Length: 152
Image 1 (cartoon, rainbow, N blue to C red):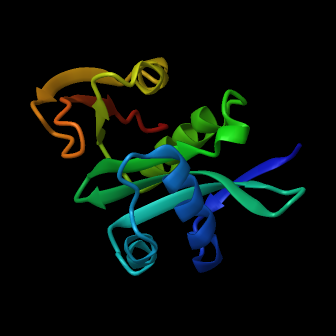
Image 2: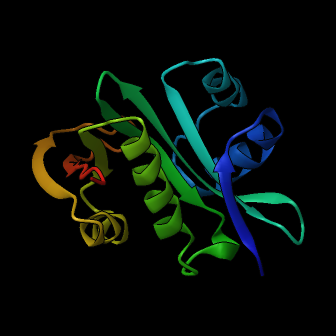
């Protein structure tokens, strides 16, 4: 299986929406995902299974000034545990280096240990908690941050 990684295009919206509905308690609407295409702050990277030419994962961030805020990362359930999330995150970090970001920030559910472990593998550090952040459950969000090390 060959997976390629590239920036999102309009034709990826349905695939991103499908993965979102399979991955999140409160997925973004197709309209919200579509609006990201026209948002100059938004950068989304998709993972494409070349054999079927479909989106199997995605990561999105907003770049504001010199910091990135990860909005979402998800991989289709049939493609989990294949390293796709790691490659998506690595691709986003590379993009942030190219855009001269100094930090990458995110919120992650306090109960989502697999995601926290992924971020820690990439040297994200815990730097706070947002109490009751998630509206669907009232769960706390752990704040994590990565310091971007530019290539010299």
